[in-house]
Amino acid sequence: MTEILILGKQGQIAWELQVTLAALGHITVLGSQQLDLANPDKIRAKVRSIQPDIIVNAAAYTAVDKAETEPELCTSINATAPGILAELAQASQALLVHYSTDYVFDGTKTSPYLETDLTNPLGVYGASKLAGEQAIIQVDCPHLIFRTTWVYGNRGKNFLLTILRLAAERSELKIVADQIGAPTWSRSIAEATSQIIAQCHHDSRSVMPKARLRQHEVSACAERLRQRSSVRGLYNLSAAGETSWHGFASQIVSQYRSQYPDRHLAIQNILPIPSSDYPTPAKRPANSVLDNSKILADFGVQLPDWNLSLSQLLARWQQI
Image (tube, rainbow, N blue to C red; front, side, top):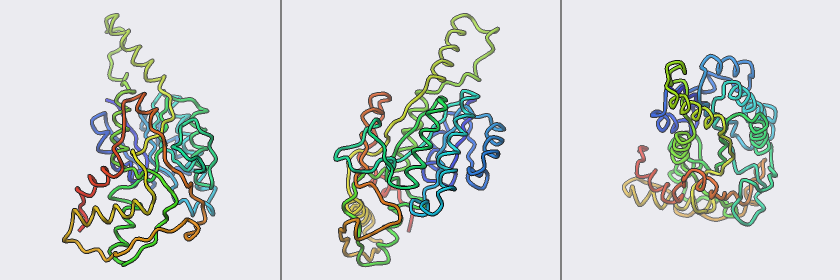
């Protein structure tokens, strides 16, 4: 059976991956309490003990502003650890799946970003994620790197949960309107990931020894091994469409009220403001929209429009 290791147990994407990857093999899920990604020796020991066929690294240091004062820790988790995982994957020809971010770009482009566009991160977080990508690519293990943007879900810490909490407490909110992106549901990311892994990965360990196989079966086994070891790619993976943070907040409140009219929200006004009115330690890209044509062409995967995904999530809302 395929052995799958998921890192980032407490995170939004990892939570969804536990469901979507369950049909593909045996899953081990580790969080920061089980594995300190800032400790290279522990990473090596733990991964070698599990011997995964697939490593899905959904763990990251994501405190964008705090990273400006903790660059070493941020870099250890977001850059050094992925490089170590790549080395381990290369040694066993395991497939490494890794998530990156739109923050590798500076946001000055006026159209959606392609995978081949020049990177220019604005802060420590973006620089660390870019370094993680580069470390994996340099090792050249079997890998898939997915750049995503504005991730949200119904657990953890994210913009959706923050807006709903504040909307229940305040009558007015001021939200940045000059940064655009594509809010992307963590479940959509996990579903796309499982679809792509299913297309790429073939479990050679379940095949009988060559001595017991007929010639055509030996050839089939060799082909599976060849395909597995040849997987390489950097892909954008985000929802279709685009909006601003203000547009996203407005839709969250509007759709929540529409679906749950009996649930009280105090919010009356959501006012658009420029980024200059809401200064942060780390500068954000003004344009975080990603072009997803490559992943559609290579794998036939296309995420739904962000507005539709938001509606689908809220329809399943469990919070009272």
